[in-house]
Amino acid sequence: MIELKKVVKKFNTIDGEKVIFDKLDLKVEEGEFISVVGGNGAGKSTFMNMLTGDLEIEEGEIIFDNNNIEKLNSFKRKRFISKVYQEPSKGTSSNMTVFENLSMADNKGKRFGLSLGLNKKRKSDYIEALKELELGLEEQLNTEVGLLSGGQRQAISLTMATLKTPKLLLLDEHTSALDPKTSKIIMEQTKNIVEKNKLTTIMITHNLKTALEYGNRLIMLDKGKIVLDIKGKEKETLTVECLLKKWGQF
Image (tube, rainbow, N blue to C red):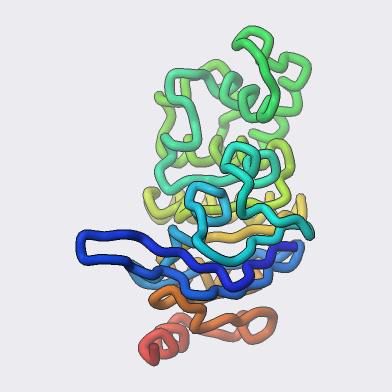
């Protein structure tokens, strides 16, 4: 489904040119849920931003459903790629209501004025989607999102990102700003949505326990290289201690 071929990404810094990825190769199969881990500077955010088109690559190819998309801008990629950000405020408009935010997400890619963009016919669908989160948000349709808790806002972001089933869902440390209890709730809802819709998903996380508990494949990045790539039974039997030991080998 997704393939990165010999991808090169560089940045110019005050100390000269810095190579983040040097001929990176990676294949992502349809329906995979991949957790990406790695230390600071490993290339995790750069990797995700290359997929969204927020960063251009210097060399190589990015293939999506057999089409080269490395020259496709980020706006056009949003038609088939959805992203949930680390900070809940980035995925929502705080001065708009829950209903207005969901309508905005539902109309992604369309031209509309605010009044025409409110999908009253879809209101019952929004309510059902919010009920699945089990956070009482179905009772908050007319509440401004900025008045909600961080966990509720992130739940809204997740719903918005998956309301129109994307071909690829990107999760950029989407629970790291939440307390442990809320983080667990959001991760369980993420799992439910991904499994229900059979979404191809890539999740960046610093939480090794989360990386092992969720998804069916784990990739570890170190200095722009894939140093570990495990899936299936091998991933299921891996412990945090073993993962830390492997990490220490690089």
